[in-house]
Length: 216
Image (cartoon, rainbow, N blue to C red; front, side, top):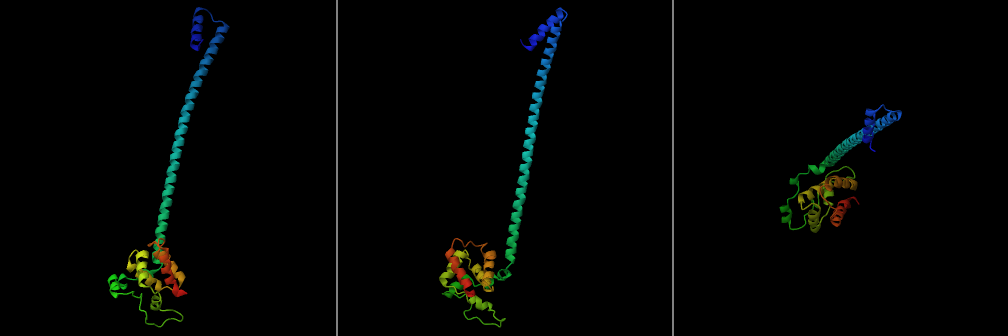
C-alpha cells in the first residue's frame, strides 16, 4: 500500500471513531516518512544546484587561467621581437666602417664590364703611405684579396644575390680590418643576416679563404 493510500485509510478511521494508540503511531510514522521523502527531494535538488554552481565556477576559473596564459604568451613574444630588433640594431652599428662606404665609391657594373678582364679589387701597386710600425696600409690589404674573374662572378651571383655594389662594399670593409676574428664578427653581424650562404658552401669557403689568406 502506498503512503497516500495509508493516509487516506487512516483519515477515514479517525473520522469514524476515536483513534487508538496504534492508529496514532501509524499516523506519526506516516508523517515521518512523508517528511523524510520531502527532505530527500530537497537535498537532491540542493545537491544538483550546488554541482551546477561548482561546474560553472570551474569553467570560469579555467577561462581565467587560459586568458592569463594567452596574455603571458603575448608578452613573451613581444619581448622576443624587441630583443631581436635590438640585437639587429646593435649589429648594424657595431661596424660603422661598412655602413659609411658610399655606393658611389664602388665601380659600376658598366665600368667593370668595359674593363674586358678581371679588374683587381684595388690598385695592384698601391701607394704606400707612412704607417705606424708593423701595420699594413688599407690599400695594401685591399690589394691582397686577389679575386679572379670567374670567382668574382660566382661570389656576386651566389653570395650577394647578384648585387655587385654590395660585394664591393663588403670587400672594402673587410680590407679595413686588422684580424681574422674581426672579419668573422663583421660577417656574422652584417652579412650573414642579409645573405644566406649555407646553400653554396663551396663558394662561401672559397671567398672566406681569400679573405683570411692575408692573415696567414
